[in-house]
Amino acid sequence: MTQLYRRLLAVWSALATRVRRLLSWVEVALSYTRSHRQIIHAWPDTPSSPGPKVAIFVHFDGQGRVGQHVLHYVASLREAGFSVLFVTNSGKLREDAMMALKPLCAGILIRLNIGYDFGAMREGLEYLGLPRGDTELVLLANDSIYGPLAPLEPILARIDLEAADLWGATESWQTRYHLQSFFLAAGRAALTSPAWHRFWRGVRPVKSKDWVIKHYEIGLTQRLLRAGIRCAALWPYQDLVRNVDANPIMDEAPDDPLLKMRHIHAFRLRHYVATRTPLNPSSDLWRQLLLAGFPFIKRELIRLNPSHVADVVDWRHVVTENYGGAPAAIEDDFQRTMRNKVP
Image (cartoon, rainbow, N blue to C red; front, side, top):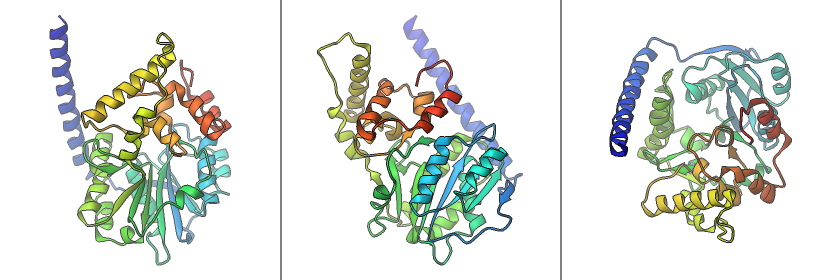
């Protein structure tokens, strides 16, 4: 019976994968009937001239809210010297959200959620006409993470545009090598390259996350690499997996459920490292990232834990030990969004 179940599960999984691929191609075809311009409101009416460092921050909330954790991130970017263009895919923003954002942002775009983050990024780049003559750095960021848990300036100082042209916070080898798109910093060599412009002109208003991840998140790094653009991560993958064995595993209390979860996850990580199976750094290696000074944690990891990371319950302890505790803005978001779970 178990063997039959496994076979049926494998068949179902393969069928579901094919259906998703077919639907993705249908969405690509439909995207040619849509405009990539989905902006329904812009503030101010005409774009202001941003400074040499620009951050395009992508947001989504079905009710048009902007949480305190998002305002904290946007304020941190402004304090770090960025002109922030806030692009929401929510199709609307509450009045209190607009009032809170205006003092922090150089511009706000409200658009429909067509094309997901990359559709929003394309419109943001076009709206500001980037790169301009004085543009030195463009940061692409989104609200999929909590933080920063520490000032951004020391992290941004590590972006060495002599060593690489496009920097990500983390890098992944899943599917193909790529910089994860929640934090991408492009220097002038990348911004003025033909490959950069060709890529963004090709971003279509596709309503398929699978397509966006494969062809845009992964595709951006791959296209730039093929064009000779140097790409690097602030927290390299190999440095993170090298520290997996440093996980606190205690055998003195083998029946303790919390310690058992740590052991299960650490064993899983070591198994994947040994078999050269790529991990997702922002979820699987969350502990190693925080211990290495990464000042963010994935919002989805804590709220939903879709990849079933066994030891994520430890996150608050690790954050407290290394950063003095979780900001109140994160706790506020939990109170509003968590359902039937304790963060």
